Length: 565
Image (tube, rainbow, N blue to C red; front, side):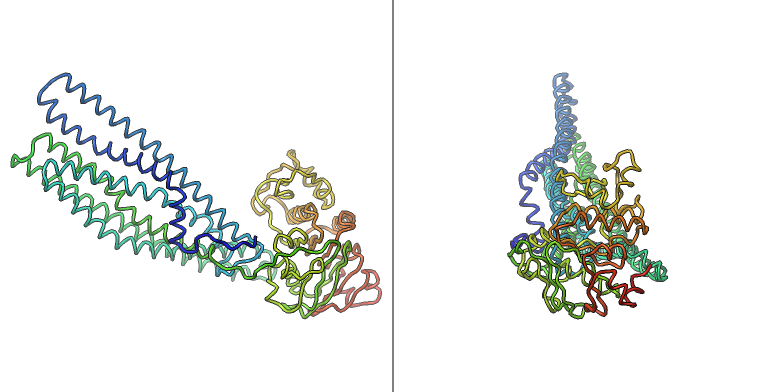
């Protein structure tokens, strides 16, 4: 976790790494695809030879040999294409997976990276950009094999007449020169499109996360208008890229057709002048028709190289971003609790409190912003250097602890804990430890959800828990937090979406399941406040009172109004 990342930090470096890792697959793929293109090129050459010799001599043996040669060529073309593409696509898919995992792991690191991208944008980088970067694995072998086809055709035509071979070579160079200019335009347009699509994706993610509160204060229409603006910009840029791609494809096709026509006309004129034979004319016309396909592939490769480079540059933004903090390498002392000492961040104005080991403490925050800021600080979403004061876990400051040690001893479960596509079981035990999850399911009262479905804990859950109610999602998130069994557990509003009776039972279950372990609950729930050993009142960013829930109700009218339901 603390080892410096030695991976590539630039788009060019990412592409070099991808190519270096797949040298073997690319060599095999290039050989097979080169064999395929050579076979394709050999077909019109063989037809020309058949016309020139076998049909001229009218020998049955020569004709049979020619048919056998054509069969060998066709078989070679079929098998080399099939196995060549299989090798290249497997390498492409594997390499894309590697970069997806790497970008995703960077985005999911407990210590945030100092990158000017939102989670939705990082998701786009981890999917589309990773796939387009890995396409370089196929692009290079296809580029080389297309070059092989063009060179074989040029040599074969040059043997018939030098002018035919020179025409193919000069024409190919001219086509690539024109298209290289257009490919740079495509690269620039594609980078801008990817950035705008990523921003639109990030906006969608923000809207989905905040849809309920947006509806609450009537801000949904303004938010939707904001998304429409971003989405429209992405659409306009996509149209621009499509136009550039259309111009590129049309230009490439036209130039290739012109070259093929020029070869055909020149060959016909040479045959008319008697400088080449009928068989050579057949070969030249066949090659002129065939050469359009490898020329098309050859001319499209610069475009894909530029797209891959643009995607690699975007991945480099994530992979090369420095962490917002440098974690230490220490570990918390055993049998020590949690301390917050004068933290000033956001709405927090220097609260001081301590939760002893094994204690169950609740915090009643009168301002939701202060509760959210406290949860963010404890979850290390805010680096220790970004706020005044200190948070200590097991008697040691967070800045001195390794991220692995913090996560091992301290878990902060947010009120909007993410639910993943999978099953109820995989959401509670995402690591697949195999331990029994029954206690966590019963404590969170997720038992009724399990009983509703024939598959029980193996019931399928959609992404973001779309097929669960708000209360079911919240209880599933709570079950996951309780199952983790960390020494220190911080819960932020774990029961806001459940009814009062269920909330009462869950509060008792949490106190029972967490007995002997340190638990801090940030909540305004009377049931959870009553189940705690003591309650801290957080008002205007500082701790203003401390006692049991019932004592505070009896002597503090403000407290009673704040937690009354």
